[in-house]
Figure 1: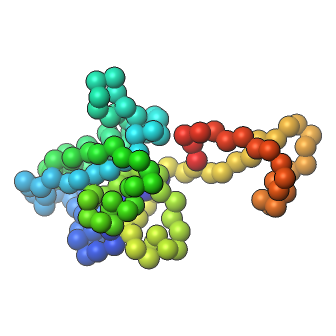
Figure 2: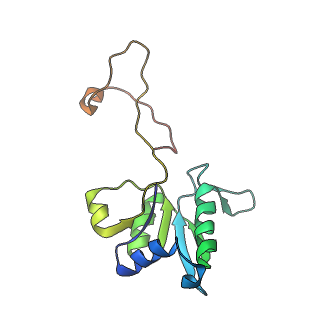
Length: 145
């Protein structure tokens, strides 16, 4: 999982500012987005807000920068388009790095490793290539990578 921001010079400053003195962001509000369907990282609260690790992380970044964080829970499919449109300053959400994304977005160093895994019946042959799944029925864990 990474913090993601638009690939512009100000984005480099944002990433660097997360590690330095709060004075850099005084009187600044950052618009942060995340997907609130990824418990325990982000999930709705009974009171209508959002909570979880990603929310805590965004708030801690704001605290260290001396900035306010306006956190928006949005559908995952709208996070990167919203970031690219300037609606959000950065994302605190699991985003897989691809070449196309890396050409347009700035990623921090990862802070969560989410490997893809297949679980099969004991004694079944190992799955070594996705082609082996052709014609088979598979199940996925909704809400997880």
